[in-house]
Length: 405
Figure 1 (cartoon, rainbow, N blue to C red):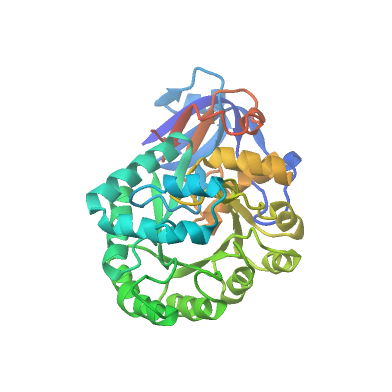
Figure 2 (figure 1 turned 90 degrees about the vertical axis):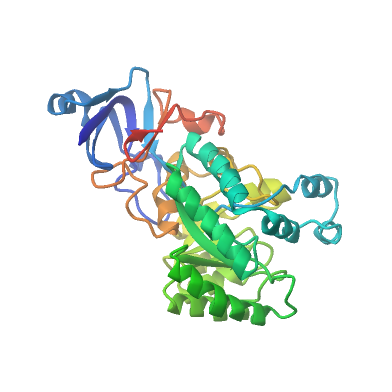
C-alpha cells in the first residue's frame, strides 16, 4: 500500500554524501515543499508534494511547517541493565577516584550484580522505557549491548531481554554481545574467561540468533591487545561482526580494530595523530561518544582530525548506567559539533547513514528511494535551527517504516 506524507518545508535527504571524510554544508541536498511517497515500509520517491499528491489517494498531510531528516541511528548503547549508579556519579563529581569508588562497591561490577539479580521481565521493562524515550527523540535504530552479565546464564538473559524489546517495540534494535566487557569476578585469568565465552556462550548466542555482533573492551583495566586479538579473530571465524571499545584511556585498541577488520572502533578519547592516521586508511568506522566526556570529564574524541584525515565518523551516546547516563543523542551530537567544529552536514551524517554503517546497515540513514521510511520531523522551516538549539529542539513527529509513532 502506498502513502504520501507531506508537505515538508524542507527535506534534508543526505543523498550523494561521502561515506568517509569531511563534508561541507554546501553538499547538502535540500528539497523544498516536498513529499515522501512510501510503499511497504520503503521510500518510493521524494519529490514536489503537489506533483506527488496527484498520484496517491492516501495522504498523511502535514499542516505545520516541518523540516524532515532521516531517523537517527544510535550505534553504541548499553540500555539493558539493572539498577542505578547514582551513588557512583555523586562520588565521582565529588572527586573520588575510580579505584576508591570500586572499593566502595561501585563501578561496572555494581551493575553486574544488579543485572544478575534482575529478572528477565524487569530488564525488558527498563530497556523498553529507555527505547521509548530514544524513539520519541528521533532515534529509530538503536544498538544495545550485553556485558553486565559476565556469565553464560546472565549474558543470555540480557540478550533475551534485548531480543524481546526488539520483537515488541517499534524501534529497531541491533544486539551486540559484550561478554568481554571485563573479566568476570569469578575468574582469576582473563584468557580463561575469554575462552569460556568463545566455547560456551557464543555458540549458544549463535544458535538462538540473539546477536550477530561481538564487542570487547581493550584497555589496561579490561583486556589486553593480545587477548583482544585472540578473542576477535576467533569470534570473526565463527561468523560474527566484530567491534572494539578502543582508545578510551590508553591507545592500542584502534590499531587492533584496523588490523582485524573491525566494523567500528568506539570511544577514541585517547587517540593520537598516529591512531587517527590508521583509522583514516581503513573502512572501520570511528564512533565517538561525547556522553562519556560529559560523564567522566574527559577530553573529546578527535572528531575534527578524524574527518580531516578522511575517516568515517559516527556519533553515539554510549547510554549506560555508569559513565554516560544521559542518553540524549541529539544534544550530544550538537555539543560535540560546537566543540569540534563539525559542519551541520557532518553532524547529521554522524547520527544517520554513517552511524548505520557502524552497524553494517545500508538500508537507512538517507532519504532516498529504496531506503527504509524512517523519518524524523522538526517543527521549523529551517534545518539549521535543529542544531542551533543544542539539543533542546526535539522532534515534532517521528515515523518508523512510514508509520507515525
